[in-house]
Structure formats: C-alpha cells, structure tokens
Length: 335
Length: 283
Ligand SMILES: Nc1ncnc2c1ncn2[C@@H]1O[C@H](COP(=O)(O)OP(=O)(O)OP(=O)(O)O)[C@@H](O)[C@H]1O
Ligand SMILES: [Mg+2]
Image (cartoon, rainbow over all chains, first blue to last red; front, side, top):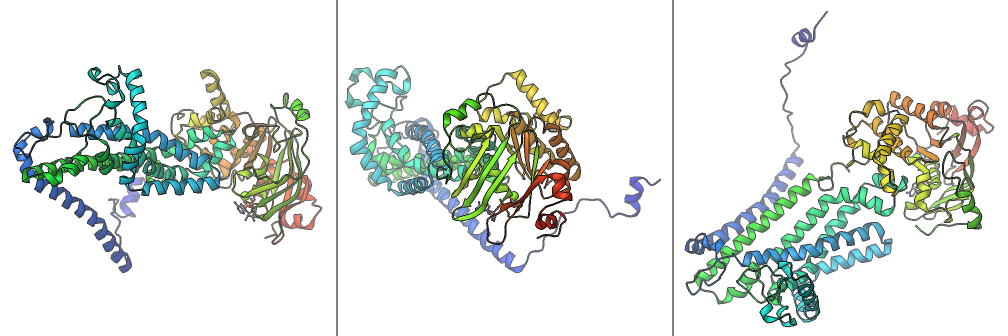
C-alpha cells in the first residue's frame, strides 16, 4: 500500500505554493503604462490641491491653533478669533437637509423610471433628469431666491407652529412667528441644494436599478410577484450599493455647493439647532463672500476652511466608494 | 405590455369567474388554442394547439430555435415582458382564458409556475427564505409554523431537504448549480402552483442531479400538471406522458408537427420529420 506521503515524495514536485508568473505582451505593457499614468494623475492632482490648501492655510492655523475647530466667530482680518465651529455645522446641516429630501425622492424617481414608466416616458424622463443635472447652480440659486423661497417660508412657518417642540423647527419667540424670520435659513438653502442633488442621485440609482439581473426579476415575476414585490425583493437588495453610493455622491456635491447657498443664506456665526430660522452658513459660501475683501491672514484662514471642506468631502467619497465596491451592484461580480 | 394582438373573440367574464372559484387548487388543465407569437414583426410561432391534461407531463421537443421556450413563456404570461413581443390565439387554464383579464396576471403566474434553464435563486436571501419567497412576493401571509412546514415539505418534494436541512440559513447562492436548480423547483412548489413549466431544467446539471429532478417530476406530477422542454430524448421518454414535436422551417414560424402519447412519438411517429428528429438524424 502506498500512502499519500510516499507518492508525494517519489513522484510529485515540491508542494510549496506557486506564485503565478505573468508575462505580458508589449501591447499589454504599453497599455498598462498609459493606464497607470493617467490613473496616477488623479492622485497627483488630489495631493497638489490638498498640499496647496495646507501650505496656504498653515499660517492661519498657527495663529488660531485648536481654536480653529472650537471658535465660531470669523474675524481674522481684525486680528480677532476665527474658527469653523459655526460654519461647519451649518454646512453639514444644509447638506443633510438636502439629502434628507433628495434621497427618498431620488429612489422613488429612479424606481419609477426603471420599473414602472412605459418605455417612451422612461427615455424622456431620463433625458430630462440629465438635463436638470446640467443646469448651472447659479440658475437654481436665482430661481430659489426669487420664486421658491417666498413660497417655501409658508411651510417653514407651518413647521415652526406645529412642530416647534422639535429643536430643529424651533424659532425664537421674541420675534413671534411672523413670516419674516424664515427666509435665508438652513431649510431654504437645503431645499434648493436638494434640487441640485436629486438629478445626480437619481442618475446613479437609475443606472444601478436598471442592472438588476433579469434572471432574478423574471424569477420573481414567475412566482406571481407583484411589481412592488419584485422591487422589494430583487431591485432594492441588488441596488443597495447604488442607493448608498448615489447618496454619498449627492452629499459630496451638497457640502461643496457654493453659489446657490451664497445667494440664499444670510450669514450667521452662531451655531443653532433651528433649521427654519433665518441665518445659516457654509464653508463654500464663506469663502465666496469673504475672499475679495480679506487681508493676508484672512485669505490664509479661508484656505484653512477650504482644507477642512476638502478633507470632509474626501472622507465622504472614500467611505461611499468603499461601500459601493463591496456591494453586489457596485462590484458587478455577481451579474 | 398592453399591446397584445388578441385575435379571437373575448369570452364573457361572468361565465369564467364562476368556474374559477373551485378551480384554483390541484392540477389544472392547460389548453393552447391556435397560438401565434411575434417578436416585433417577426413571427416565430403559428397555429399552435395543444392540450396539456391535468396531472400529466407534457414534453416539448424540437430543434433549437423552433419556439419551444417562446411557447412555454406564453403559457404563464412571461412572453409579454419582452419589449415588442405580442401574441394571438388563446390559452385557457381549466377553461378560463388567462389573457383576457378574468384572472389577474399575478394569479396566472402563481398558478402556473416556471423553472428556467439557468438556476436563478435570490442571492440575497437564505435557502429557507428562497423557498418561501413566492409567498412574500405575491403578498400571501403564513404563520411561523406553517412556514417551517412548507419549507421542509417543498425542499423534500424537490429532493433537496437532506442536503440542506442543516444549512437553511446559508445564502442561496452558496449551493451548487444542481442544488440551486432544485431550490428553484422547491420555491415554485411553495406557492402551490397548478401547472409547472420547466424549460430545460437539467441542461446545466450532472447526471445525478438530473436523475433527482426527473424523480421529483414523477413524484409531483399527480398534484401539478407539468410541461417540460427537453433536448434530451431519453429524458423526454422517461418523464413524459405526451410529447409535442415543434419544428420551424427556414425563415418560417415554428409549428407543432406532431403531438401524441410519448410512446407513439418515439416508437411509431406519424411524420417522417419526427422520426428523423427523435432518432437524431436532424439539424
Ligand atoms: N427576445 C427575442 N427577440 C427576438 N427574437 C427572439 C427573442 N427570443 C427568441 N427569439 C426568436 O424566436 C425564435 C424561437 O426562440 P426560442 O427561444 O423559443 O427557441 P427554442 O425552441 O427555445 O430554442 P432552444 O432549444 O435553443 O432553447 C428563434 O428564432 C429566436 O431567434
Ligand atoms: Mg429554449
């Protein structure tokens, strides 16, 4: 009787694991080189931007120290204190309000387009939404300022009157709840930013929902599945990565939105819970507003604020891409 | 979805719903009357008449591209999901037309289940969830104990219970191809269909899994009418009671050339083309 050990000793080569050697053709190598180069350009640009912001902002950061994170006022030009303790929360609030509205609407719109709309309407809607994504944010800002805001503050007032016990919808009773306290708020800015974010989120989600495997779809239909059943058991589980990825992409966009927010808000440097009350802020708007009138320290401080925004956006997008890559629809390995 | 070319007169709904009440359980008879199918302007099936008797296994055989899958998909209204696909003629389950609104389309598909060539379990669901997925999909409610019983009985009927009883919580995609196919059969059985359509269910499977599925077919055929497409003549002989031979001449729509008890088709075919095909002398 020969044991397994005998065989491996006598006939077989050493069992040590092999590292497969790949020999690439010339074309392959040339293509690889080009692809690697263009891929690394992205990283170089990122590093250059980050490095530039840090280089220009470091003076201000030296002056303020940790105060840059804890201080809410912004008076670098008069030698006063400055920090992002108010601007940053406002920035995030506007983005979250935008996302809170945009994500459900985008999911519903994307589902309508991929699952319910007749084909001709589908094409029309897709084109319209892509068109909306291409409208300059200045236009959204102007329309939001002159058309939407006067109508929206009625809703703000309703929220304050009826849900005022929630800190987000509370307004200072000293003023009473006249309509005058509601314009230029985080809420109004968030609503307008959400309009800009919806097309972006919807495109991503529509793309992903449309890739739900036809085999699974038909399997669900063949079991007597209702349309909603198919959406719930096939499309949404498959598209989870797309929903998260699209939302994060929207969040990145919302955090950086400048001109529309600048037009809407009246800058406030006192952080508050209320989103419906007048006064809000954002890092991007701050930079846009102060840039032309700032001294050297002021500019440096704005650069530091820009760095903070850059870092946050980077974190959001990295988190998003890792979630999307790990999901089925993102990596597309299972399709 | 709505652009069906319906060419026969619409039967009165009142008379058909009366039949419906008692007829939604147990093996049902399926009748195709003069069915024709189009993809866009291309006609791929013509004049198909076929009776699929309750509790019997009907095999559809014929060369590739003659319209077997297309015909099968008209039987549970999956054909209309293809953009531009239309059909004519009528299909009756226990005498009630399935295309003219007497039965909601989701009920049609629940009562006439389907297993396709490539196993398509829901990858995000566990083995157990896959089995009962049809209940959730069609909005049926069951209690926890009913659910557990159903999972065991359906997996047993599909010949899979012993292999997966300890891995009910694993994801459906973790099973082998043959196991996935039997899981799909179990899933179809869980909604207690009256007819089960099978499109080459064994073509991607090894001989053992194939045997197992054939055994399943003969076990369940009493309580559910089966229509199976097969390219394997031995399989068609083994499992079916009746056989329909489809053929499409070049650039012509497919039609049924011959339809008889399986024994006759294989031993005593009426048409020379059938004889050529079942003896492997054909395209
Ligand atoms: N989605 C489609 N669009 C257009 N034509 C189609 C479509 N599906 C099938 N056909 C055509 O319809 C005809 C019948 O196809 P079908 O799939 O029913 O054949 P089959 O008998 O099942 O073949 P096989 O044995 O290879 O599965 C073929 O000519 C095919 O090209
Ligand atoms: Mg086929």
